[in-house]
Image (cartoon, rainbow, N blue to C red; front, side):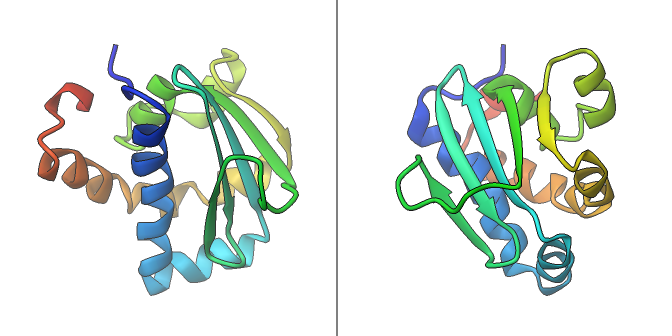
Length: 135
């Protein structure tokens, strides 16, 4: 199982990929246009990460996080696999590996931009010598 050791590590990699997306002008513009405030409730390890896409901000935990208009619930392994291009969101939702409340079509519309971030995510894992998280 390729998952994070603890909450800070999940926040570092999953929150960090949103921060990297915000640093890319093309990705940032697409994320902002979506209007999504996406809360990810992770398990194994437990973490709450809220990505305010219009504001280009990531919040960790419940304190001071804006109210989401979309919530995803998934485990750390699924999140890690997704950012490596190994998880189809529609299929994972159908199989109940991910549950979503909110506007799923808006999330699906962002998938082409997520794909541009797969290499960035993998490079981060490699840079940090985290071969154990590579799938």
